[in-house]
Length: 265
Image (cartoon, rainbow, N blue to C red; front, side, top):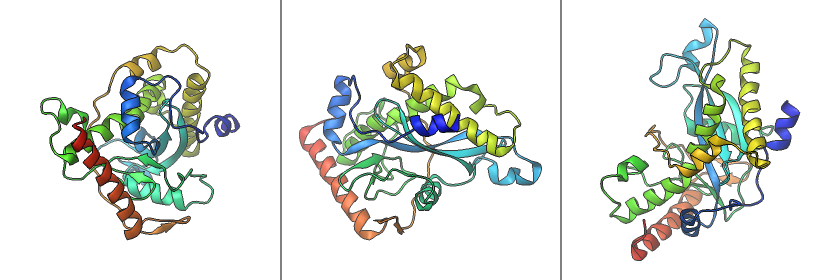
């Protein structure tokens, strides 16, 4: 199964879905450099008593493993790394995975980036929303975006929502991710990867599937999970320091100013 997973969970060669909607075309025009979305999710885990503290999710009683994934705009996962402790912060997981030479993390080209939420640093290759500004889609249901930062965050959230919908399909199809069986932990980790591989197989080969149809047609309202920033450092040639942050901050401001001048979102 792991050989199959390595063959079917691979970086995409295109950042445009096969059957884009009009809304997606509009959003991709706003973010032409976006390759997909990156985020972490918690998957239920069964751990020995002496390891449970590290695997308890933030503010949760049960144990979880933190899984980081990237998906393209067809809801196909292009990267997955499972097994981190539930208490681990998303930005720390990303750094450690990026440092790990065996992870095969698909760094984007210099002019491309992944859409991330506020748990990650807004730096070259990873575009995050403005902090201390409305972001989650539910925040805009009653009051439309007004400032340039709000307009940017709303558009960003709409396009990045693709990974929330992909997670929705994945977890509804694979209930074991919500209530894991008491296997040895390496097996639990492999189960996550196997579920992602099945998800990709169904989507890549256009198998008729009600779950994909439902989540493609409906916009999920994503919860505000919070999160903090990360320190600058050099990872495999990509410097997460002041110059890289300045580059992405400038690009983000350019997009925000364009949205404000155009009256979009």
